[in-house]
Length: 148
Image: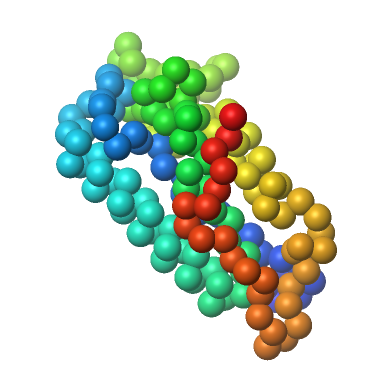
């Protein structure tokens, strides 16, 4: 925090779930239900570790785990890309650039931004605590509201 200044809050953003617990599609080939469940569990576990580290570092954790709930890969309007195979017919493009496999697309980035702003809209909420003080309540992993 000293590089940016003591008065600049540090926000640490968690990962959103991108896969449904059941069902597959051509955007997620080869993932059986057990593998999907494992990947979803690991995303939650990673976020719990990220949240703990953020709090220990005096940062603000922003939960995004459930932000993509209605827009998972294989949904009608996914907020993340499925498998991207350069040069194959399954390449997904957004405008003139190739988007990354299993990463948020522009709608996903907008959702993440809205999730950050919903939690930290006012500068007063981002005031760092006094030296040795405690941070305000930190959101729990899985507390994010889904984006519309």
